[in-house]
Amino acid sequence: MVTRRQFLHQTGAAGIAVLAGSTVAAGLQTRQAGTAKYDLLIRGGRVIDPSRRLDAVRDVAISGGRIAAVESNLAAADAASTLDAAGKLVVPGLIDVHAHVRTKEMPAICLSHGVTSLLDGGSAGIDGIDDVVGYAKAAPNRVRVLLNIARTGILTPEGELNDISRVDVEGARKAIERHRDVIIGVKARLSRSVAGKNDLEALRRAQAIVAPTKLPVMVHMGDTVSPLPAILALLKPGDIVTHLYAPPPHGIFDESGRVLPEVIAARKRGIWFDVGNGRIAHITWAEAERGLKQGFLPDTISTDLNETSLTDQVFDLPNVLSKFLMLGVPLDQVIAMATVNAARAVAPFKGLGTLGVGATADVTVLELRQGNFEFVDNENTKRTGKQKLFTTAKIMGGKRIGA
Ligand SMILES: [Zn+2]
Image 1 (cartoon, rainbow, N blue to C red):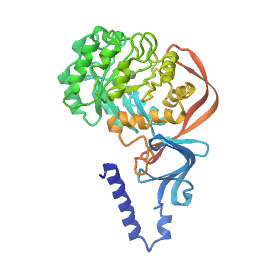
Image 2: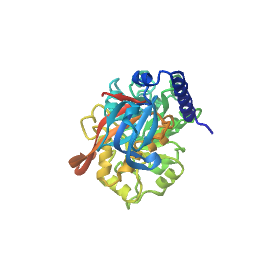
Image 3: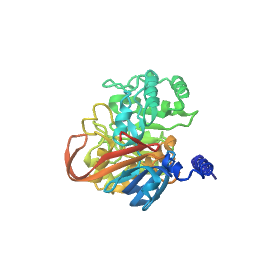
């Protein structure tokens, strides 16, 4: 079977062959005129691509917006431009499956952190969705959006689902239809302060909204009125649970601190568990360590970034990834959680999160610095890590950003 991606790659290669054939006589001149074999060569970095279990020093060549080669010692003379990545990590463009795009500036801020694709975690409902979709379409990176099932979108402190009449199933379906290219699912925040005793009814309505399209639902768990197993029972494969390390009540653990069997069963039937760092009651070191110790790792690590958390607790995705390095998750697994896993969890990101030949050339170059770095959880408990990731370059669709 030829996938769409392979097809595009093959036609791209054919295009180059035709061009080369027509300029044979010009030979050397053609090269001088700028028809180099590669548009960009990222040289000498430690390439970590968990999609292919690759962790080795390699050169990454990009041509026509796609990955053309990942090999040792590719010739710099074959490239129109080069980027020296010696001593750096070269990874697939980072994917943040839970951030908040409430301003037109936010996508570019995320891109400056190395995030080439992101998902808005239900900032807006029917009332404000056109604005968010506008920001997504104008973004320099790839932004997709979850529609908040409450027409108001996020309402703090009153909580958008405390009044269940704010969920308009028909209206939400129409909004999705209007923006089917950008809206890829719905979001329901189910905590006590947001939904009170309406949590299960809200989730039933969320599933009703997406029933015709089969789009995923992302639920925000932690401190719900209903126990987590009752919530999980209403989820379908492909749905996402964010804030998996939320402190009790009604986190992923039973009273003795064991991961609930219903949680393990939910993962087995295809439900994704995401971090969603955020600022309030979404993650504590204790919960994260308890989960990691039992082998219940996140599928995806996301920020839940907003204007406030840009300067408090979260800061950026590489900072949140570094917290998991501190907690002992191996580097390649941490990178997987923000690349290939994220691409699997969000259908429109399928085919991203990899440096496989032919893939869209989204690449993030990171520096893993050694030292003493302070991290905090949502209870502002400080921990010192020995390593921290910093973004040093980002390439979006083959183009270097902010060089
Ligand atoms: Zn959020």
